[in-house]
Length: 182
Image (spheres, one colour):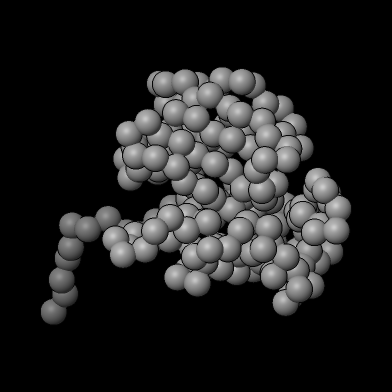
């Protein structure tokens, strides 16, 4: 006995990478504001193009992002205003007031969020650990630099096999004022 089917044969579809690499802390009504609300691993250091994909995810969850604050040393080309999904986001540049490994996102309707920014050149395994550390329950009352420093201390990151050249991350040196490249 034979059977026929009208189903077409399966074809391989090209893999499409996710548009945003983001890990967020779960909301907890009993918990106050933590230092980190999660981590973001952009694909490049072009804030104008990367911010659109981040806003695609965060605007429906948190409300429209209206302002961002970043360390300009990690974003080489910064405009004071960026058009993001049909609205304008104002960009603040801070070199001493903001953790250098962080992006601060503001919304008029929902408040403030602080995300660890994982450098684009970071290897996948280090990025996964950093995202888990910044978005887990133990991330309360920690800073972006503390998460980056702990990763480096535990895993010797950045590793030449994982980072494709360049400044992998920065950290604050408690003995010096300002930012030190690592």
